[in-house]
Length: 284
Image (cartoon, rainbow, N blue to C red; front, side, top):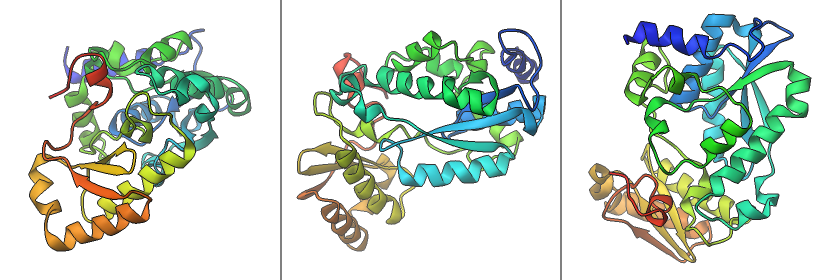
């Protein structure tokens, strides 16, 4: 299937369950993070149904990095879609706080509960779509996808067979600044499973990670190990992080966030580092 045909299939997969059209009083809500997948879904929807028929929904809580919220606002403005900031309360959910390998399921359940409740009524939503792509579908570390299925959330990219490479190609075609943006999972992904997740802990990680990003790195993780911050950056950036001026700035910021030690992981950035270890496999 060519990309143009895949786009048509993705648009068809966004049609609401009742088969009626979208409009100002019957809008499509797009679960939105500001990352490339949800940005492409929002852009496709705006082009297919018009900006008055689409609203982007971002879940705002302690698990969302402040810089990601700022970036999502900029991306929504770039697309020309309304952005609704919806408060979610996953840190009040005991199963989420316990931080097992299925933590994301409870996070997404809380998020879609908020999206499909008063938010849907207030915004006139006929359906909700999210940015799972065909590459995501094959991953084994995405329990949040189960919650999306339970809530009947549409997944147009996955249904149309559009994988990550095609998503980025579409983003470039649409002139989206996030076309090459790295994945940025929620702050709770930095906490080892079994360590309780609290708003205070997430804020500490957010502060420490900001220090790394502000030192000039576009992609970084600060993994939480008690009073130790284990910093991950792409392997190509490891040597630069260890340079004296850069290193000193990061150490100051990480210690100011409340850690006692700032350490560098020589293995580099590892997607799914905690969850994939628990379920018996690591990503490349």
